[in-house]
Image (cartoon, rainbow, N blue to C red):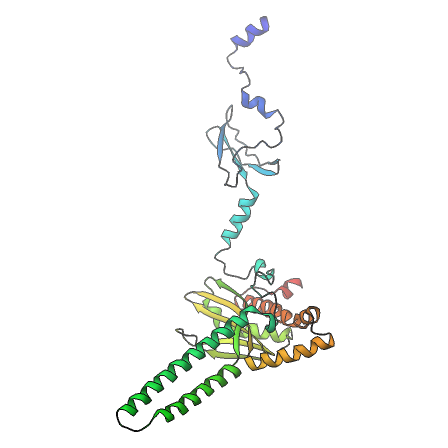
Length: 338
């Protein structure tokens, strides 16, 4: 009884509050200060008993149920700031900080064929994109031939009715010649079909556009990437200005590397195409029939046949990244490894 009376009479001695008691009790698994449902955790200020210490304390990281809780240094006003970090939100913050980006990142180097949009099959005889483009080309040429024949027929009929003589035979011959010319263009002109592409916008790197293509070409030469031709071509896309593109050709496949300024930023990318005419496709179909007879036309042989093309796509992507990385002031991976 005397001890209780002494405790009541001493105003300086405080009874421990619930926070002081809680500090000495192990936190149950799964408990944490903050929110965890995919949203960023909010900072929270908890009252601290007694005057704040003048000596600064280093933050002590603690782990609770897989979540990282970092206690910051004491703040003035007798409070301690506790913040709970969400690992997924941290990763998203890193990605957001890198976008927009001014240099080639590790994610660009790790992209696979699916992320680059490369078709599952590179065989023209099994590529649905090619047959859609073939049908589109046929419909276009057929429509043009029909319109021209109709116009010539109407003109010949009007000329004949006006008393100028029989012009129907002449218009029929002209229409036939135009149809033959369009048919020859359809059969022998290669049809470009997109197989894959990649692009990136590098912020405030427009001054590097002039040297980027040259660096990419040097990188392709340094890696000795197999090709039939490698040259810089000047092309004028519809509605755009004339630009230089780096063209790599191997057989009836072609890749184009683009590097040009877009305001103060640098656009860099590549596209990979099939260039094959309907006549060559027909001859390939005949050759495939003979391969079927000899046992070399099955899926295994044809898949292995186009693996070098996939290697060319991978080399084009790697050399584009390496060349642009050098042009923008970065360091290629081969140098970093040394």
